[in-house]
Figure 1 (cartoon, rainbow, N blue to C red):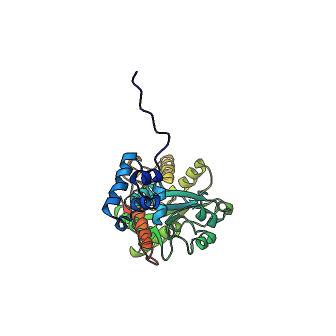
Figure 2: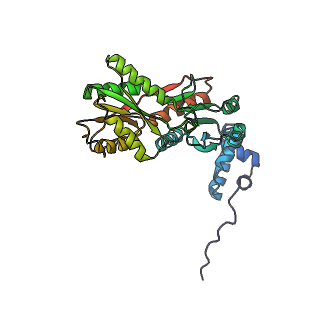
Figure 3: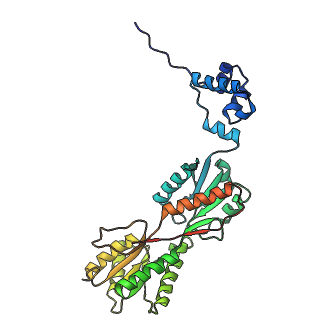
Length: 336
């Protein structure tokens, strides 16, 4: 009977390679660790031949430690969704941008009652990407001082941060709507009670509103504002939006600051009020992707998450290369 080949009981080690090549373990490690210039060609060939014969594959972690690099970038955000959100397109963009530079992304969540320095001690990384939609906790900023370089995402800071240019995006969207529909109003949500405002608002809320005001001033047009309460059930939101839509002095186009979810409710409210979209009332909004299943191609300002990812990774790599600081960047919104 033909006997099958026995599987090796363990994976070959660096010690096995050194023994096969007839050199010390330190020499084999140095050759495979990128220090070939210190040895004769015969020694290098012996180590590499031994590696191939034994099927040895160097440990990526071991090589990184020997070279003083981890090859990893830590992505940190709060575990509470009202403080931070991670868009799938941003995550994918970061992974692609880092992989293209030979770096790997690792993730950690930070709870508000945790000690931020403990998080940084647990993550072995060459640099950090901090994804926060509100002001980062002071303890986290203190913990980052003197450690690995860090770049903040989705927050406005003088340096070392990447955010979307929400003000310019709102200005451009409002201007387009003026040109297309003639009159434009602004509708946004506000908390039903003070306790609903669990954290300070994202910078986009104020920046977008200011962009609308800038566009009204540029066109010398009167402003029109309407509020609805979030934190209540959807039928109540539809009822509130319906009252706004039935306002006798409402503009022809209403920009909904709360995104596509509110647009669906606004379409329901318009139908209940007997208004035809977009002939009698039009909507525009902000979002992460263009939605064309509402019956018409609605004007939208879209966040460019891939551009944010590329900018953040490029900024972090500048810091890793020795830059002491890098000015913050604003990513332009796309318009459809």
